[in-house]
Length: 385
Ligand SMILES: *Cc1c(COP(=O)(O)O)cnc(C)c1O
Image (cartoon, rainbow, N blue to C red):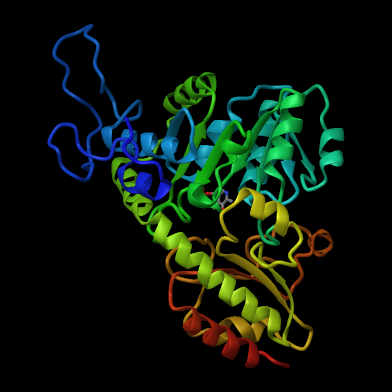
């Protein structure tokens, strides 16, 4: 029985949070591949670490509780987690994905699953009518992200889940940008949640990992089978790092989001900034939907410099914020979607999507907000043509 009712407490005490064998207040790193058995043919709880490992099991029970699901599963990366989920489907099935899903999700469908007869179609999930019209008998699932990279596009979770279920589709959400602290898609009717735990859940840019949470026991059994059969599991040490990251998730996300709100409001007032994309801004497209389904605006901001500024001067001028791929760590990172995360999209299409050459994506860390604002200010000012 749980003796608490708030998610902040779950981060510390949720799931299996102490060691049943020794009482250690932190679940130890069970760095073992196998387990001694008493005799042949006896029922054993632990037999081989691909199938099950106590450190990973503790993390899996914790993420299941945090997302409000039936079961959790830990993988070696976000892509391994997504691959396991897509493996629920079979040849002839089609999956709808929103127009701005993570590039790796698009790539694994386009280049890998297409070889096995699983097809996909890109749809605009912000347009509910277009989404429903895209559903044909072979469509079996929808994969969405909200907010979605890099323009922080908002999809209505509840509306998509309702339409999906009306047509017997599995509704799958990649909740990486929000974490279960800010948004819990299963509560809005989704069936499966996926995370790149490399980002906010790990939170310190020191682990690559992924998580899956299922709502229906039937899906839990299938994912457990796929996880063991295909083997993309998270190791004990990485599982420990995720548990450790989750303990501070609430305080980190509060600070991340407060910093992001301050920075977005600052950027909005800067003459050199044409557009600011941040779900926490009142005028932002989708702000009302986002507010309904998430606790705050999160900590990802994109912004576009006006033509009077040279993007090539901006990045090297930053002194504190690091130019790097990835996001969600305690340190602020910045990237250039047009040449980095979205470089594989042809320029014409990229421009049509709004990913201009002057667009900058910022993963706001938990440093002091004024220090971050000063760094952005001097870098923008020194990139004026
Ligand atoms: C990073 C990311 C992934 C992929 O996760 P990896 O851990 O890098 O494999 C998937 N979805 C989103 C939204 C991401 O940001």
